[in-house]
Image 1 (tube, protein in one colour):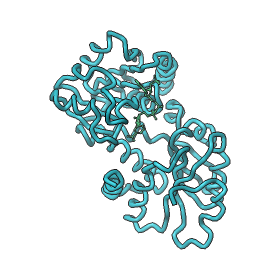
Image 2: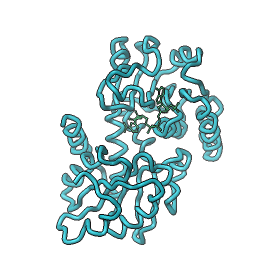
Image 3: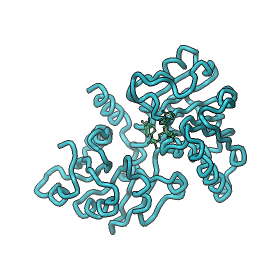
Image 4: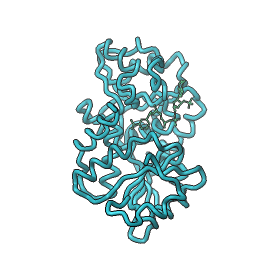
Length: 307
Ligand SMILES: NC(=O)c1ccc[n+]([C@@H]2O[C@H](COP(=O)([O-])OP(=O)(O)OC[C@H]3O[C@@H](n4cnc5c(N)ncnc54)[C@H](OP(=O)(O)O)[C@@H]3O)[C@@H](O)[C@H]2O)c1
């Protein structure tokens, strides 16, 4: 079964020896790789639990959470387009997830009350450590596509990590001013050090972008440019230099034009597979309060991508 609908939830665990306990919601949701990530992890720990997909219409997220808990679901991932609605449908929201404006992980307490978290930001920190052996907090960062959901989550994490520089670039510059405001107020509220007064915003076509890239150490692409194999780089990739670390959040295709060009120019590169893996592992840890079996998850998602 590729996915269930809300109407089918009542019966998902009736007479099932292998009950559905965890799920991802989205619309569409059939393409989500979350089951291929989480089922191998549940199996590796010999937990008698299934991970399923549930398609939910916009406006139905709160109802979906109630129905899913009643049906026996005990942890939920949230994907596009529901991350904001999920935030608004939680009784408690982690403050960092609030600043990100998005929730991707739901944890239930024993009364079915839900707390929302966002694991994309902390997952990014783990991904950069794994791929480049460095903490993002030690780097000067530029995010290309910071006006989107993934870009905003990563920008927020850069503030949490006290990165020494944060430049936000986006095609639609208007989206960046409110994000910058939220980041500054979060930094002041939580008394964080780092670049709170030195967050720069730029349009992707601003002539100053070339210099901003040259001054950065870690370049992160969070635009969707590169998802199609014929896509160009989101900015002129001849600007990439050997000192750069280039992280593309896209993992399929495994090497976007940006990554191919950056590699040719001598930069170190990594794709978004590690972000997918670590954001999932962090959700798993929230639900089960134990380390996630990372290698089982990695193998599961690699197999899915091969398929
Ligand atoms: N590895 C992972 O686990 C993971 C997780 C989440 C997302 N991602 C990836 O991150 C990317 C963004 O996802 P999202 O959920 O943040 O999507 P989103 O909220 O829709 O944001 C899309 C971003 O791409 C920009 N963009 C789209 N088309 C563009 C173009 N032709 N030229 C320049 N910029 C363009 C948008 O700019 P405007 O604001 O100007 O429209 C915006 O910044 C996707 O490629 C997705 O695959 C990866």
